[in-house]
Length: 111
Image (tube, rainbow, N blue to C red):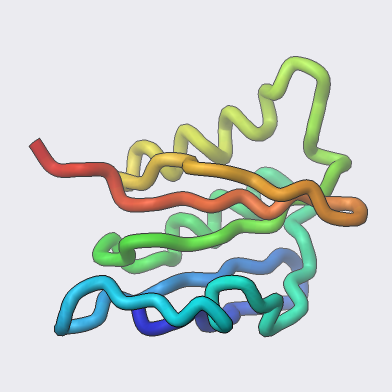
């Protein structure tokens, strides 16, 4: 992974990593930095559209989701995660921020 590049629109934010040709190298200062402010997605449809727009060849990406989408049953996040799983990415972690969660996804292993 060479680094994280921000993709921001009016609603929502996604960061993606692009595979490097020479293997997986990550600079610690890039990995730990909040480089670009990400506005969290406030709708399930917006988050799903962002996932659908991502290149299937990505190894890793982050998705910011507003706390307003965190319902007590987890249905809205299940819809978002289901789309990521269907496209070949699995959730690996999340960080709670002020008013949103930043979820990290990575490519699933091929059998």
